[in-house]
Image (tube, rainbow, N blue to C red; front, side, top):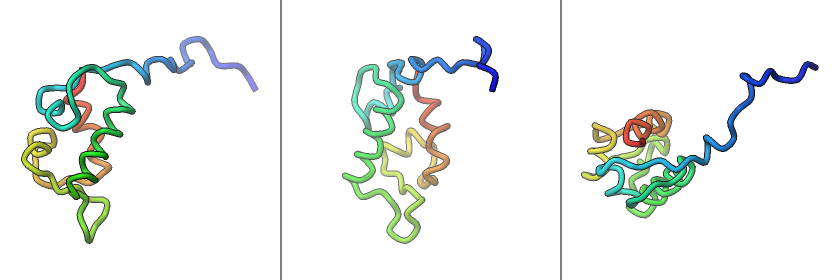
Length: 90
């Protein structure tokens, strides 16, 4: 098997790059730069703590007032969350 070309290599450090959340997202996960993986963990902690996962359809998240500002709507699937969160990170 051929080794990957330098342009094909994945920058492993980019995954752990600290990103700054928007004020709306910071209201949910806290202020300060953090890696995307930490953002996702903190968001899920918030969802679980506030019991926002839909009881019948576990793949759906029922947004409270803070999450509505991040998601732009009152309910999202867990698969929709990544791009919606990405809009709130720099």
